[in-house]
Amino acid sequence: MSEHMVEFVFPGVPVYQLKAKDISETGIGVIVRPDSKFLTLIQIGEEMKVKLLSPQESRHMQGVYRARIAHITALEEGKFKGHKVVALELISKIST
Image (cartoon, rainbow, N blue to C red):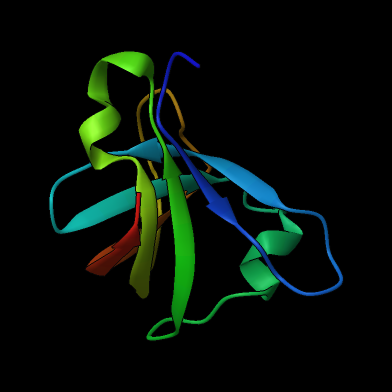
């Protein structure tokens, strides 16, 4: 794996593994296509378990976290112009 990914599991739908952007100790931004069904499965303020998958060189952040969706914002420039970024606030690490 060459980049960070965030894994989301919802009942009755396939597992989502989405590209992570702007990772810090307190939060992660996740890149989402604007037409993705994923956006219909989440709400701002919702808390959920997410799994951060990391490349070999940065395994210290890898693990399962309790996270809250802080905001959903359209990207208006750059490599992912037209996509949305879902900002996750990392509440606590559950396991590695």
